[in-house]
Image (cartoon, rainbow, N blue to C red; front, side, top):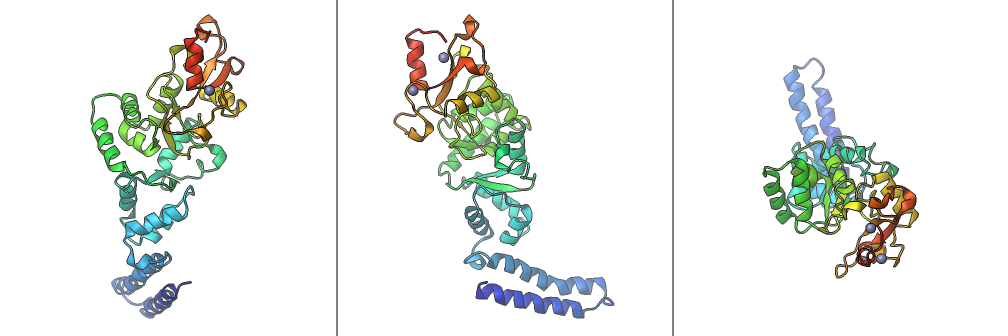
Length: 307
Ligand SMILES: [Zn+2]
Ligand SMILES: [Zn+2]
C-alpha cells in the first residue's frame, strides 16, 4: 500500500468513527451530513490505488486501469471506484469514441455472441454483463476522430442498417472496427446478424477472430478487401467456413500464405473456393471447400478452372 493510500485509510476510519458518534438518536439529516466526508474520502481511496491516481483526471484514471487489464472483463462498480466520479460512464464513452480506444460493452459483445462472432471459448461472452466493459485491443486508434465523423455521416443516411454497416466497413477497409462502432452506425440491435449476412450471404470478406482470422482480438471486425466474393462462392455458413479454415490450418492450401505473413504491400486474406463449381452442383459442404488466399484464388479462376 502506498503511503498516500495508508493515510486515506486512516482518515476514512476517523471519519467513520465521527459518523458513528452521531448516534442512532440523531436526526437523519445530521447522520447523512456526517457521512459525506467519509464518502468523499472513500472516493479518494479508490483514486489513490493507481500510481499518481490522485493527480490524474477521472478519464485518465479509467484509461490507465483499462490499459493495465486489456482483454479482461471490468465491472461497472470497479470502474466507478477507479474513476471516483459518478459520471464515469460518460468518460468511458469519450475514451471510446473520441480517443479511439477499442472498448466494447457487454451489450454489443453479447449481440456478437448471439450470432457466433464472439468466442464462447474465451469464456468472456457469457461473463460480460450488459454493464461491463473490456478493452479489446491495447493499441489506440489514431484515426478515431476521422472515423467518428464518417460514422455520424453514415448513421444519418437514409439507408437501412445493413447498408450503413457495409458503407462504414468499406470506408475502413483493412482496419479493425469494433462492434460498438457498427452497432452505433446501424442503430439496430440486429446489427451483428446483419454483419454476418454480409459475410455469409453477400460474400463480403469480413473477418472476426471466430470467422476467418484467429489473429484478431475478440470484438472487432475487418473488411479485408473492398470486394465481394464471386456469387458462386457465397452462401457458406459460418460454421462450415470456420471448420474448413480450421481444417486447413488457416493457411492457403496452394501457397501456404497465412495471416502471420500479412503486410501492407501485399494485403492478402483467406477465402474458400469450391472444388466443384457451385453451378455444376458442387455443394457448400466441407469436403467441397478448400482454403485459398485471394491471390491464388484469383489465379485459379483466371485459368478458367471450375469453381
Ligand atoms: Zn495462396
Ligand atoms: Zn472459387
